[in-house]
Image 1 (tube, rainbow, N blue to C red):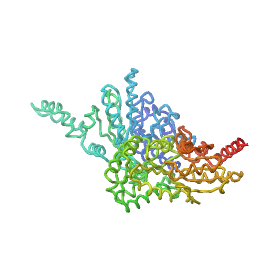
Image 2: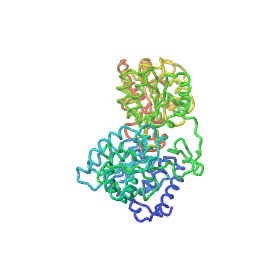
Image 3: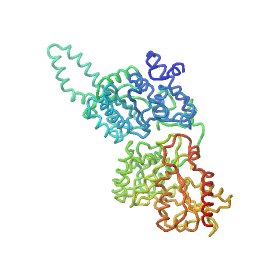
Image 4: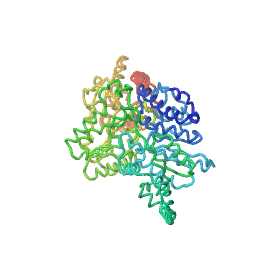
Length: 629
């Protein structure tokens, strides 16, 4: 790593020869494989942008020139070139974030780890530069072909193209993939651009050839050049971009440093909005990634660097349980269809797609469209199941409310990675879904506590044909089954206090069941009796809950969701409406953005552990008892 250790900032790249730059690229790839294999992280995307990132930092002067990364999972090389080379705690508490982080460096401008947003940021930054008189400061937005399938990107392009004098360089990192291969009309257009001889090279050849032709050569060349738009569409169909008013450069070999620097230099000097189309290979230089057809090692856990195989085999996870049950449901019911927003494998729909390809729809990174398309499918008698990360459903709230719920349509939303997810940081914690969805009329929301309940509640959800249903679950291993010892209305009783002796009613939400049972044990050790119930369906609140609460002195809710407007708030309202006046304490995630760390570390920090909860509940019981004396 002789060259890499000499790079403390982007300007250190200026002193390197072409041969040294090539060697540096190889050093970076070696570093990434060695370090990310120890911690886990986004490996494939970063291996694909090594030369591109070097070229960006040689041509542009960060942070004076703003370099922005859409999503940000390809920013590891950027971190290395801006002085952050300690990857030993990558995505761990106290270590580097897996995404751009303003707290880490002035070179990190935005922390947009949700896709398709970078062009909106770039448009605003370019407008600000213009208003402030900074006409010599280009804004550079790096966006993948997958992120270009998102509607926000095209809304931004429509505005960016409106100003011909704002220096804004859009670098399309085209590796034909987001997680999996990019699909759709845009993907087909980019594929055409990849495989068509470039117009600029044709025009250069034509100029030389025609001008050597006596008498008519120069006149014919000028005629053809005057017909540039039609000729360009014939030679390379890049008109989609140019019709918007965007200069197009490319396609460029994204691993050729000389070509990249030349193209980016031209783009920098253009003075207006320009697209530089770069062709890169996800996972480049790492045999195990290049041969991984699923996602080219988009994200990996701890792996053997030589083989790419995982070091530890995890137990059965929530996603695989859902995947198996979806296939079973697909065999039983021909009306069930699967929808994903460019995350077929991560959300567990790949087995369903393999079994029922004609009933699986990948809409690209377009969650809003996914929901409204699902509404259309449901209107025509099908039952769509849209599987998506919990944090990404936030992007489609209006569509859930107005396109599905308003029309009383049977659409099932399966929210993977709900609650605290940990290592990906603030943007990926699924801590808002149960709060946001509480306001949707008619919507029913299930939070299964174990694999058996996930299977059962998914089946219950797809039986509903007159309202949206939601099934949400955590990230990682499922854990053992948590049996019920009885029923109260539609709720499962997980632990029953002796009749008439219950002091605390603990309402457990989803994966917090084991924690709640441990709380009951800790309270019992202090002589406090508790009943633990799992509502299973947390919206609407079970009608039997207020009556059960009235048999206790204190009510406690525990959820892996934000406290504001969550299940605890809904239970409190239900008790008030029923005239049950009891002390209630809601435990959940504080309404703040949580730094990256393990799930257990975060739960401990926010007090969402059995000892912390039991201590506070015991104090509440004591205060309540004292008030009665």
